[in-house]
Length: 228
Image 1 (tube, rainbow, N blue to C red):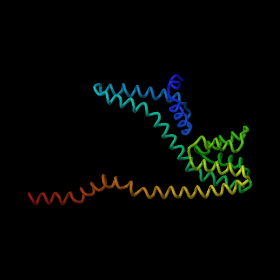
Image 2: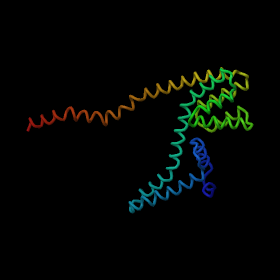
Image 3: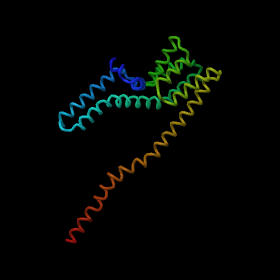
Image 4: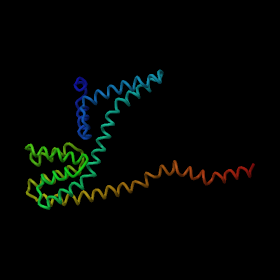
């Protein structure tokens, strides 16, 4: 708590946001203590091996101080990526349930019960909020606020507007499902187009030199023998 008081508010808010996105059971206070402890261990641990290298000790302290941030950020990115991948399938499930005559809350309950992963956990939490008295719009807005997925925010905004303007939810879900499938296809095509560029450096640095050695090595040896 002392570290939280002396730490700038923006840093603490950033840590709280990363913890929320990562969905881990920890607090900003624990991360602050971990940063200080790991920084001290990194500084004094490196100084034991390099007693005359002040720069190495400082670098070890900096790495230890930043390590908790990077770990939580990595978990948060992985979790948000899983939510993005699972979202089109979940919306399809909601659409089929609503078109079959099931209410929206019941459809959310079915999707949460049948699904696995962070998105299913978030849906269960939103369903619990609805059951204790929160409106559908409030629960969905809380769902969007707890995560950092633009497609999820778009879906929440569309469902909320459909409730406000009386648009059938089934129609909104159908449009959202089609749009998300299109976006997923575009992301896959974009990644596929980046593969040749990413393959250039491994080819030039690893494969081509080995290939040249295998092909030209014997010929080079024969040329050297002939000239000698």
